[in-house]
Length: 148
Image (cartoon, rainbow, N blue to C red; front, side, top):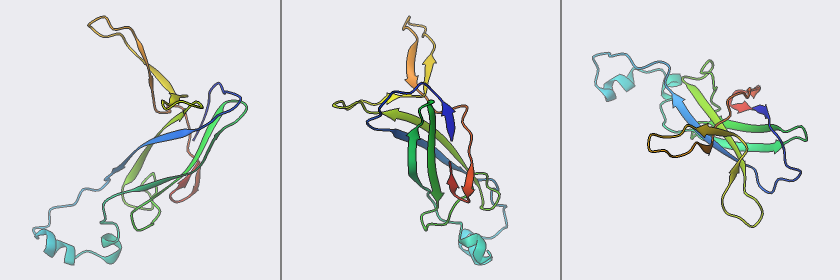
């Protein structure tokens, strides 16, 4: 995922916060069987995908001199099977959203590189700058479950 932003000359820490959701693309059909009985009629390839959870790992991240933010990440199920973000080769799409930020030296609060300005509220609060997920980035598929 890459996007151009203004860059600082040094970056003490780069954080990527992922909002990742596994979206089921094919809801189960009603078969008339109970849950346990229906599971006995599944093919082994279908059973392999019936495990909850997703594991996301940041392999690398950085900001180039031109301000382009790049992150490489992997997505797998809890057993280590790579998950296709588009849901083409594995059941269900994986929605990935990134927030790039850094923690300045000697501080504990992060500063986001990707921001959004929230509008003023009814009670006269001024507009607020907030951390926001990337909106204009692109994904390059290195392999199933491996994306930059």
